[in-house]
Length: 311
Image: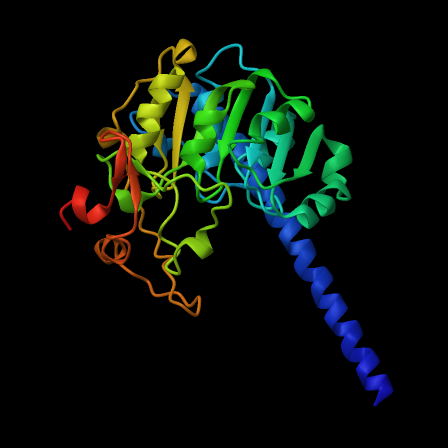
């Protein structure tokens, strides 16, 4: 029996190593393919839609490709980034920048253990990366940047905290990124200007069991971007991330309205009270949160989807 268990463990360990090696080879092939795609992006003329540049090595959707396209269309871009809301950093908007373009970067996440794990990974000594555990809010965001040595002009800022995204970007003063990437909540549609009310301890799960009540509308981000000196240049096809370029660096890129650049998300990530996926449609998702409180930035007061969209 003991010998049989030993052989079984040996077989399982061998299978794990095989799977790990296959994963490494797949990642190598993806990186090689990405380099070819980047070369093509540089040779092509301006794209009519950012989705035409999409590819993914580490990003959740096509953000890696869009970022590389924007880098080739913006001059004098600092080789530094900040991203917060990165979890364990296996899936992120800036990891390909770190490894392929050798940029300097700061990543932040509320999972302190994940940040500790990253600091012990080979990635950490091979690149100029700072990883800090922190629950980001409006009160601490600038201090976190300054404490970790990031100030002034930087190349890219990526915001993904599934909650106070609007309010936190509005509060950022310590850095002036050339490119800003922010998640928008597609369920709010392309036209209204709304965000969840500011709560420094906001978490998506606690806010509503459906996991649909978070963040802000695309138009809210576009209006904020304009006030901060940025232009909206599009979103990726999955309808998750919006891309903004500092207006003094937009050069040949074409600014878009929220209606022009909005993509409705096809992701069906709604949950029930037991955290099981319910696969609600877009319309059903709107119904699920239609009466929850939203801050109407245009009316400067509290409202709801049912009032603003007459659902």
